[in-house]
Length: 225
Image (cartoon, rainbow, N blue to C red; front, top):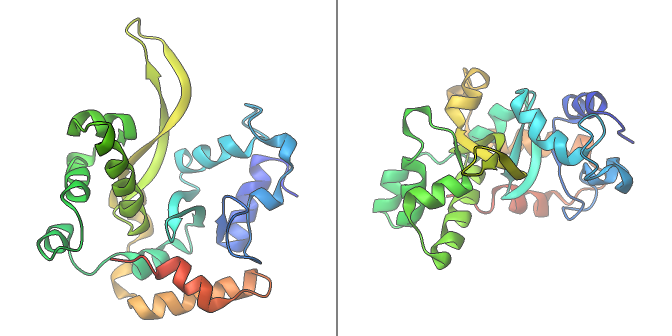
């Protein structure tokens, strides 16, 4: 069991990839299975896994987000180039939009991240001026952009009242993958997409227990653009 943030960091470095919640493929390492229910949502940064997920991105120790086939999870620095190569589309979002592979909302969300901007979901919604119905489209776009390694979670922020006081739970902030993990991707262009996927499955088989690799491949790579 993992009791402290440092133990959590050691675990990620050891396994390379870790699902956040237990609702993932049977036999796959999961943070929820590695911690006690009593640890969650206590507000203690040393022992609360809910805080660890944000702190690990702030500390630049591992990536977190909807990066395991659109499911929440963690990827270590060592494994990140493989996941990037295995999931990042060959073509730009502009070309994918022209080919009808993505919606205008996906392209609009991504274009907000020019000039190394860091944005929360609330800010993205405000900048795009979407209606209540459009909020769901934005949320889906954010997940898709994470899953295809265009943007990533890079920290969090709380809302600020008119009086200048922070309030509410911290919300995730996002930035371009290249802005957050650029130093992890120096040799990524030497990696072949299919070979990267193969290496990921081999690695996951070594850290999991009786994994169904066909299901895992579909789960991790089945939603790629």
